[in-house]
Structure formats: C-alpha cells, structure tokens
Image 1 (tube, rainbow over the protein chains, first blue to last red):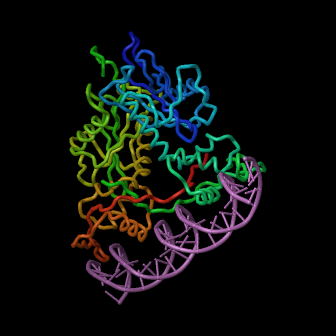
Image 2: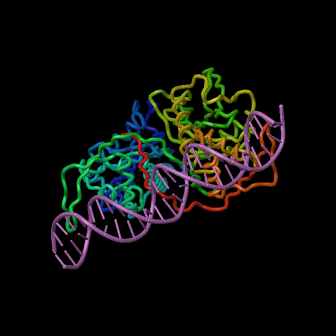
Image 3: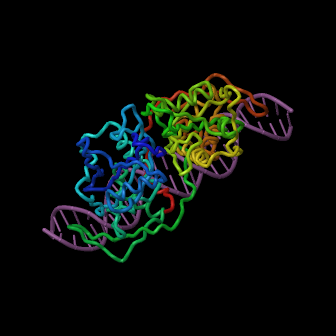
Length: 224
Length: 224
DNA sequence: TCAATAGTGTCTGTTAGACATTATGGA
DNA sequence: TCCATAATGTCTAACAGACACTATTGA
C-alpha cells in the first residue's frame, strides 16, 4: 500500500479458501471475525513489499500451521458491496490442506462441511463456489491427490480422494488401469487390513513417465 | 474508489489482452502510452460503481469500437514493480475480437503479431503469456471459434481457426467427425471456390444438442 | 460358513488417428 | 491433362465402462 497517512480502507484483500477432505466430504476453514460477529474466509491485506502469492501462503500458514499442499489464485472478485474491510475487490486463492494435519490453531478457526456452511457475505459465497469448481476442473491436471494422503496409501483410498475432489464416482477397474498406464504409483511390500475384507496393498507416489501426446479432438462444448 | 481527497495512485488497474486472428497467427492490440513513450496493454481504473467485468468491457469497446466475442478474467497480477499508473496490482482480462472487424480506432492503437511484440513491462509480458495459455486451454470448452468467423464459413476455415486458437494442428477427418457428433454446424446451399482445388461447402453455426456425460478417467497429469 | 473388500480378466462399444479413395474445380 | 483441395470410407489401436470372477481377510 502506497499511502503513508492514516489508514484508508485497504485497496484490496487476499482471501483464501482452504479445503480439506473430512469424512468423505470437503471441508472449508472459516474464521470468526469479531467486529462483524460472523464467519468469514481467512483474509489479509498484503504488506508493502508482499506478493499476492506470498500473502496467500502466509494467511494459510497462519491458519493451519503448515504450508498448504496446493494453492492457486482463482481470480479477483468485486461487486458493488465492499468487503468487510472496506476493500473494493478481493483476490481469491484456493488451497488444499492435507488430511488430518489440519488442526486449526487457536479458537478462532473452524472447519465446516462444504454443504453445511454458515451464512457468508455474498462475495465470499461466490468465491467459495468458484474455488470448488476450479479444484474439480483442475484436479486431473495436477497430481495433488497424493499430497493430501500419507506417503503410503491403498488404491481404494486414492480413488476415494479423487472422487472427493472431483465430486463424482469413478469406475474401479478403469481407475486402476489408468493409474497403471500413467506410471504414477508403485507398490510397497506392505499390506493393510482394515475391518472385514481382504487386506489392501499399500502404494507410494512414484511418478516415472511424463505424459505423452494426449489424443483428442473433442467438442464437448458448452451450449451457447 | 473510496477516497474523496486528491488523487492517490489507483489501487488497481484493469488490463485487457485483446487477441484476434490475423494471417494464420494471433495478434494482440496494444496502445501507445505517451508519458512513458512505450506500448502497453489497454487499461483503466474502475469508476466508483463499476464492476471488474464492466470495466473490462468498456476498455475493449473503447479500443475496438465493438464488444469482444469473448472476454474472461484471468486473474490478478502483482509483483513488486508497480504498474505505470502506480497501482500495485492489475486485474487482467483476456478477450477475443472477431476477424477483420477489428480496425483500431484512432492512431493510438496497433495490432502486433503475438510472436513479434514490442518491449512491454514485465508484468504485462506475464499477463500476455498467461492469457494466451488460458485461451488455448479453454477453447474446447466454449464455441468461441464460430464468433470469430463470418456467419458462413468452410470447414477448413473453421479448422484453421481452431488450430490457431489451440496452437496445434488437428486431424482433418477426426475434426469433421467430432464436429458432426457434436451437432454444432449445419451445411448451407452455397459453395465457395477458392483458388485451385474443389470448392468447399459453406456451413453455419447451428448448435442442436447439449453435451452428454463425457467419458473418462484420465491421468494426463503434469509431472510433479 | 458368510460377508465384505481387494484385485484381476475379459468383452464390448466408442473413437482418435492413419490411410486411401473419390470428387471437383483451376491451371 | 495434371494438380490442389474438399469430402468421405475403412481399418486399427487405444480405451472407458460393464461384468464377472478370484483372493483373502474378519465375524
């Protein structure tokens, strides 16, 4: 910010949508904001020499204590209603936080299931919706699912993670065939017995190949 | 902007990357900026009650005289070097402008082939690169190519447009089969003879179906 | 033993991509 | 006539999705 005077309303905020898997659902981290007595996305205004990415990372670390497994800017959002800080626009980031390790520090933060959020300001609702769809659109472009799991995992766990992030069911045999073709995982010697059925072999993330030329002229176009 | 005083540096700018097909290449619209005596992306700062989208549209219309065929926000960009206006961040939009109808108004604007741009500020270079890759990534999700062509066009012209926007060659037979399967065009009675070979039938854009559920578990993943 | 889950083999329909062939005009 | 381009048919390999089957544990 380039004003040395009082403290004008900040020109823009950085808001972070932090998502984590929780009991087969996506959960979102919110913070309790005292002046307005309501829940909001964690946010801040960048300091004088901060980058947008750097600020977003700081916000995420402050809230969870660790670096997110993945974070990406999803855009700038502005409507005619200013942010609670008075800022005209908010630059929003979506982030994924590993399973389990995501205990909110202090009492000001809490996780909410994505389908049962408390009331949020309208702009923040839009940001949350947009973040979830960006995550779902880009999941297959980035091997993020692996970073949300422990280093060893079963293929069923991996598939469940993909299903959670993509928001749809996947076909078991096809999923495994595609995994094998992509050379992304390798089996370990360990097996894990979990409840009733046959024990599952544990795998680890071990990418071997890069993508070859993907096939395809597709016209899966949206309607005009 | 919420200050009633002098005129502090604007908090952020809206910058628009306008692209158009030109002789089998993409071309970019730049404006000559007098104080700095250099080329830059067309930009402005939003007025008090403007939205980001509205501001971007105004910039595009002012520069070309018409509405762009497509426009989408691609994100907020900030580095430690301020915009020439003094703004910390720029909210960037990518836009596509129809073939031909894109004569720049006045003398302050000019089209440049995307591979032969004049020197730009570093942030603007990043914005341009990012815009082009966003266009290439999202082309297959939106039937924009049709809006860049006249109402009647040959299938070869359409394919060339797709190749230009996607930045890669497509297979002719597959392209046509996919087009037919998508019910996006219908033939007219007219034919056009162009140079040597057999005349081509003209088609018009006439979408009939919506997309059905697309198949696929794909692991065309990027390397870590 | 039964129930539940892991993992695999096979078949089928779809389709991208390659190749070849026909069609039709201009030079 | 030859050449260039349009348009189409056929074959093949890849692959998603369905289904069935085996394997291996706990209850």
